[in-house]
Length: 602
Ligand SMILES: Cc1cc2nc3c(=O)[nH]c(=O)nc-3n(C[C@H](O)[C@H](O)[C@H](O)COP(=O)(O)OP(=O)(O)OC[C@H]3O[C@@H](n4cnc5c(N)ncnc54)[C@H](O)[C@@H]3O)c2cc1C
Image 1 (cartoon, protein in one colour):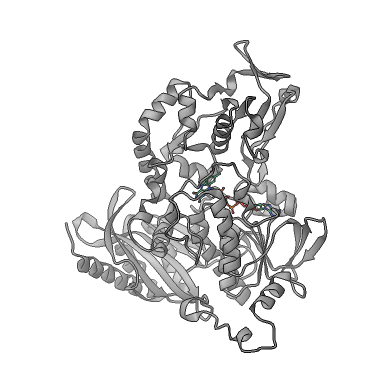
Image 2 (cartoon, helix red, strand yellow):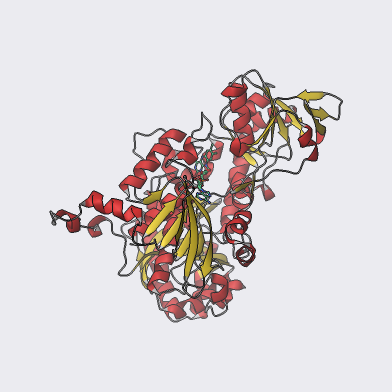
């Protein structure tokens, strides 16, 4: 069935009108016919102040029935300022995708509904997203709402803009409301959003210079995703930039970003930990400067933006102590130049292991890559780019981000199974060559590919930028970890009796989960209270990420540039809502006992 664009808009408008009436009446018998049996509702703060996904028509209808108790949302309409309703294929399913707007109890909402004609007849919702865009009366100060600058331009004797900026960033006479720990893209995105909502925010990072988190990585690094996916909030990369951004260019951009968006950023400052004062609703946080000077500050919120990978994971290999050469974890490796002509064993076949092996090999070292477990290999182009086709389709960035947020976990899993299967076909020649040299391949749980490996365990895959070809061609030798009998003074003794001589062993063995970092910074009881961070929970969302956690005042942001761009907005809205008293300070777990949306847990 083909429908003209106007028909698609009319179908979406009709669905939205019926939905609004059924929702206002909290009438399950009117909501039910609007959804397919296999339907999903994801709410991102707009109706429940939660980030939650509910799956299956019964659960969706129950949850929506309860959700409206918070205040009837109204004014649902196709948004004329955004990409018009169109026919698309998502996760292999043909659907009509419509972006809409509405008024939520506390502000302006946006959403995406994907409609499918049931048995070729009535259009029903397959997926529904309702998301909070902004808080009423506290909109971002952008465009027509931008600050006038009058405060410093009309008073000729008073402090000018620069004086004010310096004083704001010095925190001489006050503490920030929000402390963001980590000044990579996660921290920058969060701080930029918080600043726009008028929240006094300080970023600290232990590196001496903004952007060092990228600058200090290996020589040849460029980003793996294409430039159009990777923009930071508010300040897109110039259209002249290369498709794959080099690390030093990104590092320089971070400095300009901090300057342009007027972010308060203390480099060379380590967050040592903090204690929460429940009664005062504040942290007592300790910062340490490069000179060792300590400063105590009392922010109401701490946002950990310290990366998915916090503390290096060093496997327990007792015989490694016998080895007389150098041993470094991948986090301590910087450049291959010093190892020209030397022999190196790189243990681990994720991105770090491959990148370091390639860096060493191209610096003239003799490299052996040691594989510990099957690894997913995907060519950086075109295979690794398949999930980002949306960002090439034409809709503006904000629409792409909303459409991305509108895809519930189970549908995303299906999409990634399809992308993985396609990548497997595209990469077949390389994969065959790798198998021939004994490389053990893997395609992720249920074939869901690298994205789900990233979202569940933060590794276990390699975007091939050339190292797999070196392995397949025998220019980098491959050995299975199981072939190693033990480590000895000169290197590794293989079960075959051969000694694999080495001057350097690199442990590209990954990172401990963020729970370990939480325990180190906040102690056991906070770590216990929080439970796991990252990976999916039973509510189909990333655990403790971007939303209130069981520990009041403690927040997490991590993930790709795109993820942080999308979810920094929602994180900032929640902190703002708490500051305004719209949301309780207490974390999700404490509050859920009295949650109105009880059916969501079903
Ligand atoms: C080769 C390569 C290519 C990649 N390409 C892409 C891509 O194209 N797109 C994409 O989205 N992602 C990409 N990534 C993955 C990912 O986005 C990056 O690894 C990124 O660095 C994560 O950013 P982050 O801000 O979460 O954490 P990080 O960059 O790890 O930053 C965390 C910061 O926290 C600081 N910190 C930690 N603890 C403390 C403390 N106690 N006190 C003070 N400071 C602290 C650290 O110094 C660090 O600067 C790539 C990664 C690699 C290695």
